[in-house]
Image 1 (cartoon, rainbow, N blue to C red):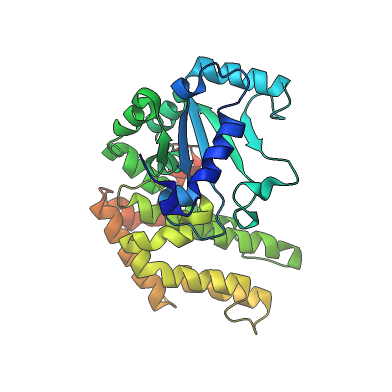
Image 2: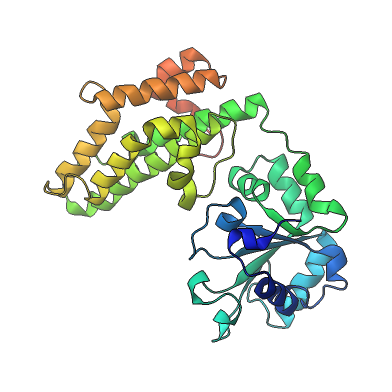
Length: 312
């Protein structure tokens, strides 16, 4: 089993927290025989800082989950009736891991839901589960589900790449208020560019057949991909321009227009041309039809019609 000390977690404090709040949950019956206990998030993935939270996920069979959910809600352990999310509310919460690590919390999920995450190729959840570290796993119930995942089928992967590539363009081209006349559109313009950046980062992972992490970790983990290592400085500059860290002397609208043209107008930006070429090459290598890549934003109907998934 994994050693929590390797992620900066005091093993005795973790053991006390689990005894006090996980293995004592009402409705659990025999929790040690039914509960898979995982460390997930940044500490599970090994990308934590000293201040990172300790994310704990508890996974159990459906019948046990329903019993724990019902009994915990009736006992006031949790506030929501249909999902299990526990946050330690005591004033002395730091008695376990200290104030630096944040207030202890954990969730409980049923095994059927975990299976669905893999069956439905739910990217973020697959990233969470495949990077989870196992503290306890009775009868290997979680490990068996995780071991069945062998990556995305090619047709699913290509659809995902197309979806997120077009969604990035949708944000940056269609949502961005090109004919802005008032500063109350600054929020929409900024979000359009930043959301486009995030969708592009997701493509970086998918182009290598990898699930992408939750939004908070996209920029930080992008360098684990080949496209990220090559192109992250370009996206980083766009973000800096949107936030005013670059070109800060410009009027906000001028700065956003500069960011838009730098990222999307290849006739004015050598970095834009390099960006398009690198992404196009990677998508083709992943199996996307070269003609589709060449058509680029002309494929937008595939996204807006729902052919590639839910509409934005």
